[in-house]
Image 1: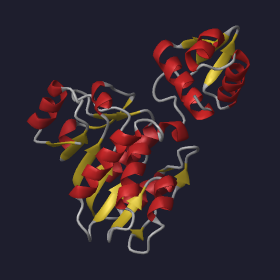
Image 2 (image 1 turned 45 degrees about the vertical axis):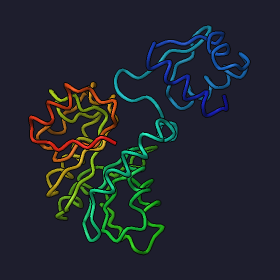
Image 3 (image 1 turned 120 degrees about the vertical axis):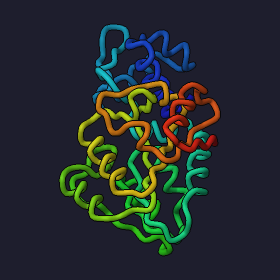
Image 4 (image 1 turned 60 degrees about the vertical axis):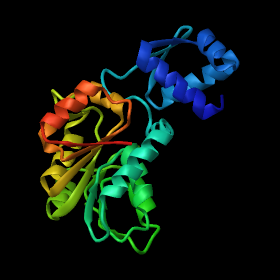
Amino acid sequence: MNSEERLRFVVEELARTGRVGVAELAHDTGTSEMTIRRDLDLLQSQGLVRRVRGGAVGVALRGEVIPFTLRDKQGKEVKRRLAAAVAELISDGEAVALDNGTTCLAVARELSGRAITVMPLSLHSAVVLGESARTKLIMPGGEVSSPELASYGATAEAGVRGIHFDTAVVSSCAALPAHGLTTNTLADAAMKRALIESSARVVLAIESAKLERTAMVTVAGADAVDVLVTDADADAAALEVYRSADVEIRLA
């Protein structure tokens, strides 16, 4: 494993078990204990783990602990397929609101160069979309979080609500049908609600595993979604709940 793969493996193991040991990680990753200790020191400096004797424990109480750059490399093929399916739903000339997150960054890559108007909530997506003169870019303003580089706050929310969008492409930390769309922070939930309420059509692009999870803050119910784009591993019962709410299902 290279450094990036090891860091991702460590964080995923912590998310699964809550505690990792240096010796076990060295064995599982095929590297030295000294290298693993350096990896754990790096993750601790980023606030993702707390070093303890012989290993490390996770520090997050709830929600996503994997850094943006690592998440962007997870499930890249699934995200690419989701993004391609979303792009097929969007016609040239549309005004599109694009949520933050790594799935929506994949959507930005698919939409780059299209003759559309896009307001991305993420500077990561803005950089991708801004590479083509054919794509008109509108930014919401407001504060920007780090390291997500996502717009938030009253100014950003007002910027979103000042536009009438044809389509909002939304992603979320979790979307268990009984709880609808949920996320980890109040600020993120407020921005997602602004996107949904300012758009004629809402497309939820989400990996199937997140249809079986719930996060802390409610964004909107399942019936706020017009089209659900997910992968073919999605739980059939979860999809049926969305269908019963008159949500169109697209499997990528």
